[in-house]
Structure formats: C-alpha cells, structure tokens
Amino acid sequence: MNAKQLDEVVHKTQELIKTPTCCQELKEMAEKWLKSVGSENEALMTQQYMAELKEDLMPIDNLIAFASSKDGQIYFGESKAKEIVRHSQEIQAQGAQYCDCPACAIVEDILKTLEG
Image 1: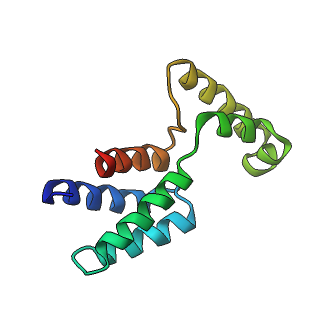
Image 2: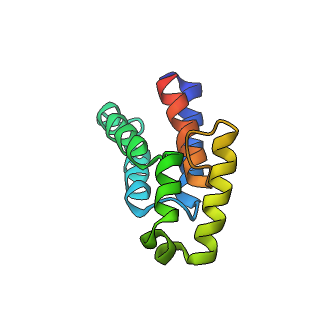
C-alpha cells in the first residue's frame, strides 16, 4: 500500500469508528489497526483488519432476510424493519450488492482501496 492509499484508509477508518452503524468488534479492530500503522505489526494487523471488514460487510440479501425475520423486527422494531426491507429491495434492484448504511459504505470503500 502506497502512502496515498494508507492516508486514505486511515481517514476512512477514522470515519468508520464514528459511524453509529459500525459494530463494536469492527470499531475495536479499526482502532487496533490505526495503532499499528507505522509499526512492525502493520502488515499483520492489515490482514486481520481486512478479514474483519469482509466479515462485517453486510450482503444485501442477508440484510433483507434478517430485517424480514421475527428477530429483525425485534432488533430494529417492526416499522423500521419494514422500512429497511423496502429500501434494501430498492437498492438491490439498482444493482447494490451490500447494505448502504454509513458503516457498510465506508467498509466497501476501504476494501476497494486495500484490494485495489
């Protein structure tokens, strides 16, 4: 990863940590990765960070299935779950493969930079 890519990933990672839709496990991994930048552990931590990013990026089909389920309705609330399903189906019809919440959008951007 060149310096420009690193700066971009650092900036996006800082944004990710601040998003309300980012899960705690990913926030913790993001913070560990940020602390590793410039250290001898950076390459290893980058691999671990990428694995966590990939694990937490929500495929749109999974989001629709969860939000449509009883558990999803309990988690989001019935009204919000229906809204999420409706929105997710709309963006899926437009070609979206992943959830477009703030955290997932940033995760997708970070992965493109790291894998690019």
